[in-house]
Length: 140
Image 1 (spheres, one colour):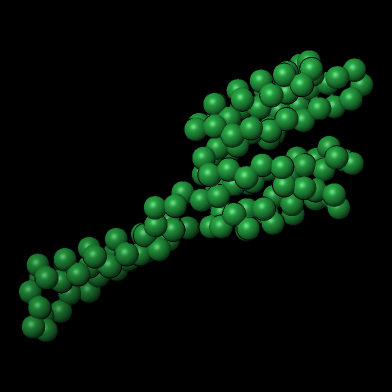
Image 2: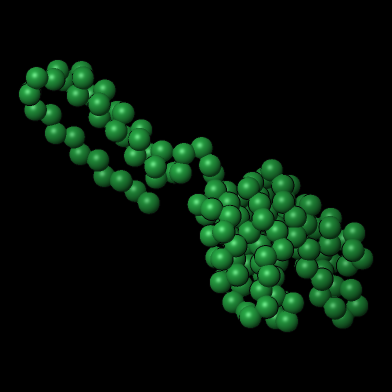
C-alpha cells in the first residue's frame, strides 16, 4: 500500500516552519495507521489432513484474520489452523513409509522457523524432511 502526500503551503498566520512540523506529524501519523503501529502482524498455518494442503499467511492485522485467511488459502473443508505466529512460521514435509508427514514450527527468522519445522518433521520419524515446494517460510 502506498501513499501520495501532497503539501500545499499558504501563509495564513502560520510560518513555513510550523507548517512543516505539522506536515511531518501528519505523515508520521499516516505511517503509523498504515503499518498498524508497532505490531508487525499476525500469521497462521492451516493444514488439511484429507488433501495434504498447507497454507501459510502472515502480516494480518489480527490473529483472527490470519486464521481465517490461512483456512481460506488452504482451500479444503477440513483445513485447521495448526500454528499461530507473531514472528515467522514454516512447514516441512517428509515421508514415513508411504505416509506424508507435515510438521510446522515458528522462529525468530525464516531460516530459524524452517530449520525448526524440518527438525520437528525428522523428530517424528519422517525422512526427506524439507521445505514444501512453493511454500517458503513467512515472517510478519
